[in-house]
Image (cartoon, rainbow, N blue to C red; front, side, top):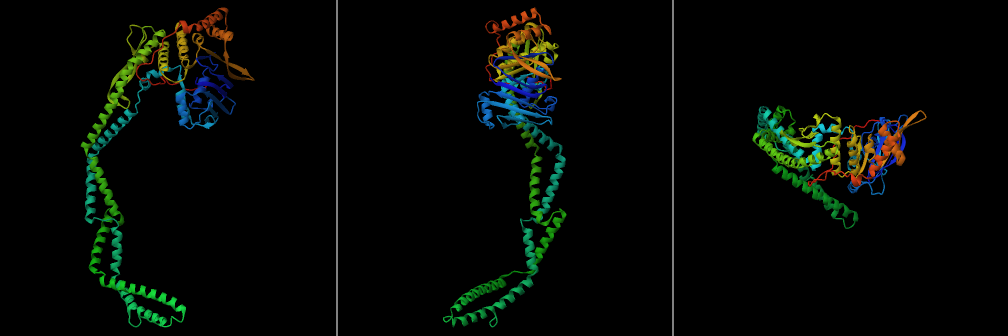
Length: 581
């Protein structure tokens, strides 16, 4: 069992109610407008559907939905992967407020609506009463077949996008070939002009430093000469004076300890002064401060500044600008390589064709199996001789979903030509076809809980009873919940809940009761005969319920078996849009 219990408070016209779900096949019945679909709405909101303030009971400030569930093995893995600790009891709680905001928890841990939706895809499969409408939409039909066949389209979509990108790049190159050629010539001219200078990295800073040095050559020579004379003059030079001071202290150092410290300092000064004198002298002998070098630097700096002004750049930027233009020219050359772009486009197309071929192969393999399974179900739903076909029509050009379009064709009667589902006139036939698809794909799936919201609309009589038997048989393997107005369907259920309206203190509330025995007979009789039950309707109801006990032994309906190919569970139709009941 997947769903264990649901508790609602201040939801639509429900003040407070609690339902404990059972295994097998459960039905909800009640008079029109009683709120039979409220529980379906609540379950969808609990599992991530959009929550609007209109779902809050009038006069209340917030609504609460709590759902207990028992996760199967694959859901336990999902829960652990999303950080939820293993537990014996699992509870979803979602709270709606009048500001349109909602909060949700799983076992007291906050959870997002998108996570609830993911969880709901594992636990619930909801089929709405207007399920047939989705069978007229190409995307829905294609998705149903792909899910049935276990086809994933990620690789195909990626290949298609790469092919489209290559096409766009090639077309852009063709469209802008003339303008790109002009741009290529302009950039090439700029590079040629700047390469005459051939600027090097950090050369501008070095030129400035050399220019400053040569511009002050005379002052530099004078300063060095004066400094050397001050150090080396025989009478008053620093070296001579330091030597005299050292000699004077050395003659009496043995008598005064302080002299030793002074000598050490003076000797250090003398050594450093001698080094400085040697360095200055060497510099004066080897320095090159030729005025002709200054002229050459002036000329190069003038060319540098001229190019910087021409291209409206700072002089120190010319080196990096030249590198950028070279890279731009390389890109332009590559963009104008039409042959290479054509080769890339063709290569991407071949990859796409290979991916599309794999998808087409799986679709062609799955289509007759799906058609046969649904055809079989149609026979049991009063469409004897009816035929269901899955048609694959080649597209003129590959699409992101493959090389073909998928459509459903139906022949409602023996001898009639299969036509598109949208051309089937009878609403009852449309409902039965949708139900056949729902039953077929649900049987092949692994979702533990199946919910049918008035999918039996438009059928009656023996067909309605067959619908009930089909749903009951599904309930032998899964948890099945159905909202119905047909007594034939209701009588087949294992568990029966009745939704009714009660009036208290000038307010109307929706209430749900589980019924059995005599109460159930009365409800079936009401569904048979209307507001007033009669002995005849009660007797008929009792007979229908007694027949239910013999269903398994005497009226077993062979549901479609799973095909040999790997099948993947899917929701064949979208659940109906949530609206307050």
